[in-house]
Image 1 (tube, rainbow, N blue to C red):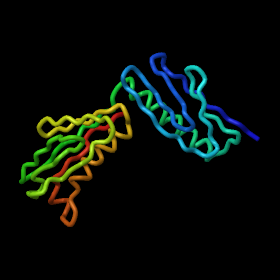
Image 2 (image 1 turned 60 degrees about the vertical axis):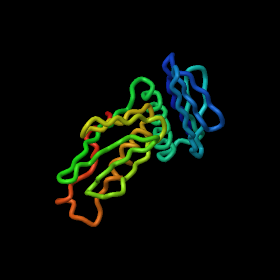
Image 3 (image 1 turned 30 degrees about the vertical axis):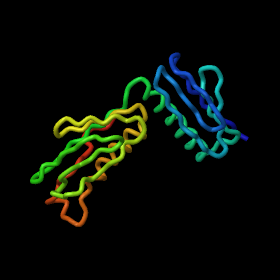
Image 4 (image 1 turned 120 degrees about the vertical axis):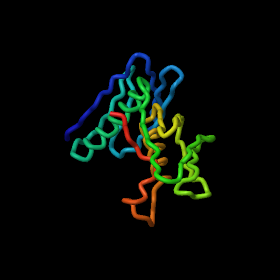
Length: 176
């Protein structure tokens, strides 16, 4: 039977801790942890190396191992530099105002609606609003991306012609 092993080298300033299937990485005062549940794949820690291994190699096992490897590399990359998403606020008639409040982004006066629309901020993601530009930053790619998607989905227009009603918040720049 074929076996395979993938080795990920950790930078010298990043420390790792593995408990059952939860990998915790720490760099200075920033920390990130993630649970990896993958059948047939083992994670182990030896010094400053993370080893992804399996007893049987196949297309599906390779695909899952590559996914785990990329998730771990994204966690490490998040310590080097933040993932940044830029969004634009677009409106034609009713001026939209955006405010950040305790884990939420509140969108007021969207299409003249009286009730504000809200989008959740996930994890330790930072959201900055400057006029018609919104910047979402965070060291977790998943949290920053989902926060940007939440903003875009909060201003989704339904039951109207999208060609006419183009108001909303749209992602204009993604990392990578």
